[in-house]
Image (cartoon, rainbow, N blue to C red; front, side, top):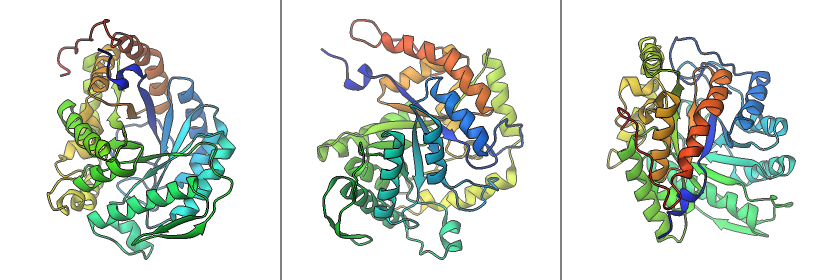
Length: 374
């Protein structure tokens, strides 16, 4: 019997672009990172030479939970694409603040300029303050996902159809003919843990991003989204968020995590908690992003500590490959000190991952989890 298809493909790795100030943890611990373009250009080149396939530019339009300054995601992503040769850059965007056909045109231009490396992450929107500050109407949770699904359908119609027609509740196309078409249709990523988010991913998205999860949590999401995708004759790939702390010893890595949490910016974390509390509680089944996140989880604002990629290179590599066995195709990583830790990952962790992946080939055996990291 052949191995599951995803086991034959190498895991892909992405990193969160630090295009907003404050780093990837809401903590007063030192974070050697920078939201400037010069720093991010250097980081992107370093990352693509150390095994990273994707970078995700964050979307923020105003200050929130310690992120006082923000670079706009689509223009910043294009700049990083032009500074690199292989890296695919994913620009996060909010439906409701873009018309999807206009964005389709922008991404097509980025696709041509970069040789087919532009991608998009459609963020249905949890930060009500941004919408109200911009004078835009705020929709309830499931309505935001209905709008996001139409948004993705309009993107695809614009990229693939001549004289595209679309009639939805939120968007219309009447003979829209985007030329030139993309060199390759940009990949569409999407996050969200709610029932509505999972169903939407199964119907329309190429990739489903999960917040940080343990093995059981990610397996449950993969099973549900995959089932919906199969019902619609589709396949969806899965990305998992994780904050990675790789150190020469397990003790050093765990001490770093404890220091991050001990030095948390309490006011900023509480502000973020208050902003996202409605994300899960506003759904009919009370299931959604951050619905069960504790204070410690929210210090890394996409529950990145929950994935437990914290330890020695060997421990982390074994855990990463166990996630792959369960259906994860991509790890979306954040770091405390970006330049140093991206290089450390590529030099010390990734070679072990690739060696363990080779053992997943039929007949080669299965790597055993490292003790303490189940």
